[in-house]
Amino acid sequence: MELEAVGDLALHLILSKLSPTDSAIAACVSRKFRSSASEDSLWEKFCNQDLGLSHPVDPSGNPVPSFKETYRAWRTAFAMYPWPLVKRVKRCWNGLKNWLSINFPEALETLREGASEADIQELEDALKVKLPLPTRILYRFHDGQELKGRYVDRIQGFPLGIIGGYSFYHRTVNVYLLPLRQVISETKSITRDLGFSRRSKYIVVASSSTLIEKVFFLNCASGQLFVGTANLREDGEMMACVPKALINSVHEYDTEQQQDALLLWLEEHVRRLENGIIKLRETDNIRSISLFPDDSPLCSVAITNGVRVRASAVFIPESTDLQDNGGNYQFSYSVRMSLQAEGCIINGITFSSCQLHYRHWIIRANDYVISRVNAEAVIGQFPLLHPGEKEFVYESCSTLYSSMGSVEGSFTFVPGSLMSPKGRSFEAEVARFPLQVPEYIF
Image 1 (cartoon, helix red, strand yellow):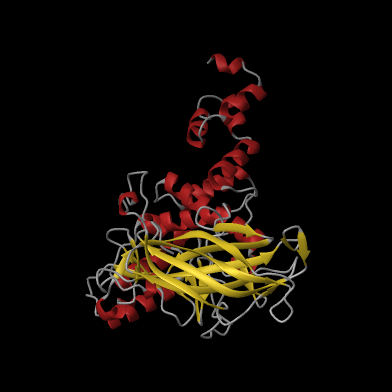
Image 2 (spheres, helix red, strand yellow):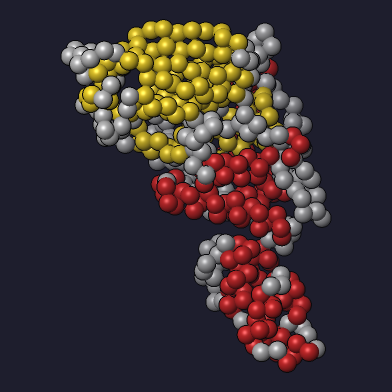
């Protein structure tokens, strides 16, 4: 009780070091404690610390008179769930939404409001499953994405999927999170087509918005997330998307350690976005999240005579055949080339442009050379590079019998242009970049 003699500022500092629960308990000690523990600045700190809130709003986004009432509203709304797990899911969504608001606001607008407990119960009754706790809470915050009012065609598709995708040749993949109503319809449709048992605990939670089939399934019993392979339609073949060892206690309400694959998957995706490992790509004024890594060590960078070449690859599970001689893994790679601001410099002589003529590739599987490519052009084009212009980007693909390999090589460039060469040709390095099946598959 000697704390009764402590000044108001000191008492406020002491309470701010406690948890919200302990501060509420302290308020029961005396009137002075109750007064200090009721200060809204204290609960503003708790709301920001636990929920990332800077304004007093309830879980539906409605204004609330005070931060203390805000905290109570959130605890009441999620009273049936472990609070540490609620805070963790909220941090995941906050990280994703913050990134989208800065970089990709048009995709942020597609996020639906949170689902109700009744909505979740309707899904569980319709599909005869019990959602893992982390997935339930994820949907309580946002019921997937609303993709409507836009034409989805075979080439571009819908570019606003928050998981993103890739393009190569005439294929475009862009993955979005399904709202619960579509989870129900897609799950019923695809499980019927695949001949899954009615007792199957798989539900469809994400898919490509294009006509290229890429489907992610959550196993509600184990908490693992799977993606279909090239053999999905024939025999239901899938690959796990998250390390199994990380999944824990997905149905236990009395533990704070739950983490199913969908939560882990989204957290890893947010980490990659926030760290700049993956970024936006703009093609023909259409923006989308590109899954091609944009940072080392997964993205290689080499500069030769002013020509800068960046290259990386992404695993393509929906085109991979695991039954073909022990494995037939497909990868798409993206190569981005540009000319530095100082131009093309050869032996101290500066040229204002250079043009690609040949490509040379060395492709390895498990460190064994399986292919050497020497040919003209890239995807039928001979890019002419000038200083300050956007990168020339092209994508292609490669198939390995192994889950790990690499690509390296060079491009033959001519100073000036092919029609008007200004000097001898030179080789611009393409530093080795990996082809590998990752721990987290997107």
